[in-house]
Length: 179
Image (cartoon, rainbow, N blue to C red):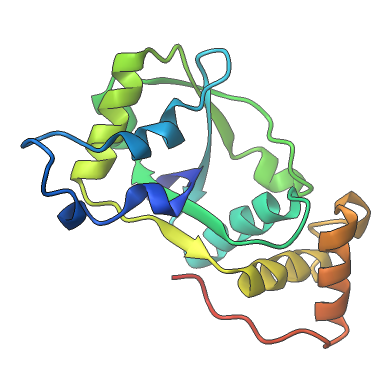
């Protein structure tokens, strides 16, 4: 099954139990910010095979686009969430250092405030908890992409390039798997 990945900020998606002040069926405003951060009424997402290696490759490519190794938070949801909200999409090449992953990039287009709110509500109410790749795992994923020839070190920014070099030379701690 293909899933949809959106990069988020995990702290915005705290446990629903924390929000006892919310009215029935409502969502807190913070998670909305991760889906309402549009440009031209479009939102960037990645379509991912739910197999572990497909997800890890997309995460490595996204992390390789960053200035430095840092945690990477994301949420996964199904295409049904898009269809139920009447959300249109258009495939548009991504800009990561992994050309294969760039083909998995899509823009959610013609978004209105109502569509963004509906998507946020559906993801929130389905209790699709955010996931996090910690800094050490980010370095490992990018380093594996470099080692396997999917990511060129020349496309990495200096701070991340140095962390990846140290990892490949065995100077870094062993990372943990994504949760």
